[in-house]
Amino acid sequence: MASKYYDIDDILTEEEFAPVLFHKPANRVTIDPSAETNYVEQGAKVELPFWLAHELHLRQAVSINLPASFDQKTRLEIQADAACVDLRSRCPYFYEFGCKLQPLVTDRTLGILLSTAFKIRYKERLTKVFTATHLTASKFLPFLTIEETNLYEAAHLSMTAFKKWRTGGPRFQRASILGRKRKES
Image 1 (cartoon, helix red, strand yellow):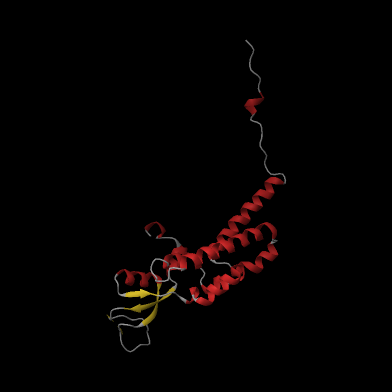
Image 2 (spheres, rainbow, N blue to C red):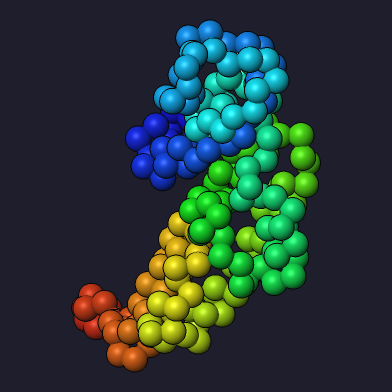
């Protein structure tokens, strides 16, 4: 985690909310500003930012449940047609957040869900890079997660550079030193 300390994407990922269940009561805690007391009872279910939920989980004060962005409805939509699911509206950092959640939740199928969704969507995005024009790309870009958008842009830049090279960009040139003849002795 120290290597990603200043990474803005990592910071935003950890700001996503995760539902937790308190195993221990907590005093002097303000979760809801409109609440009359600063007390959380044992068994209370609340949503906390992931960074806080993770720290409380390490102290065995809470257990983390799966957020709504990884619920059964999302899983069924991904199984039906992963390429058409709007994952960004559910969680902009869907894959990164899922990878951070996976070791902390009891549901062991989360890793399979992330892997399956990524593989299917990645193949679809590569196809779009090679075939879509800039105008059609703007229609599906809002549905991509941040990670997918970064991959799409990298692939698009690579494809653009390849096309430029292919149509007359700099070619291999013979080194000038190779054109000289040896002195005969």
